[in-house]
Length: 338
Ligand SMILES: Nc1ncnc2[nH]cnc12
Ligand SMILES: [Zn+2]
Image (cartoon, rainbow, N blue to C red; front, side, top):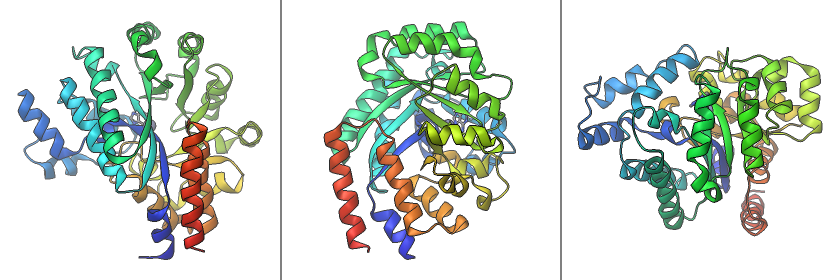
């Protein structure tokens, strides 16, 4: 194992861009399908894995929404979430801020309450078992209407104290942030933070809209912001945290090669960029896999890794106590590896 890989594995980390439905492993898909009497279009785990070849975001989303159909009960959402925490514990992940896509479930007739209560109980039980703190982000599907997003926000009202913020995901091009300006304003009034996927496939203008109209507290992906120098300066000056997802970018053909990951350029520009897994089951890697693959392809230095991990700790919504605890552990790992 290289020194960089040893360091990556040893450091305490956070994950700030993870769709819990994207952590559904093929084995779990079969297990849930069987217990819920759902017919799968695949005969084996190998068949499912073989289908995970995508040319763009939409090809992935089509399979992602199909995969979700096995998630039907509160117990399914609990088990899915617990299994994700159990998996990232191995990666020395100490804190997660996870997205869920309620509309992907309510539109199939699964009650909103079952979805959120299952995820929250998974976070609580897994958090205690593995020493991982967490926040939950309710993400709107941008291919659906503003009205549908408002309805979803209303369903979330009884759970406001357990939701960190709202997010925006799904098919980007043709669904600019401006479509959701009023929903995000309402969410902010309700005390929620704002996050949005922008610049994954969409143009720099979508990143500007996310900043100006949605008033985002963190930018998810942001790759195409690099096409606009003034926007890069703004992200720098406003200290916007970016959640980059190297293996996701590769699998969705946002980049042709990991060497083209925006991570290095973002680091060189002094942006607050972090490393994340997005949909680890679909993209072939969890948190450490993303760090290790990016480090190798981009020839990241030890200092680059420390900056990325520190950005993830500083960019998380942690209590000062918890942040201090994680940073103390970070410092002691750094000392041991110096
Ligand atoms: N990478 C991604 N981009 C947009 N929507 C998503 N939903 C799940 N993963 C996503
Ligand atoms: Zn994402």
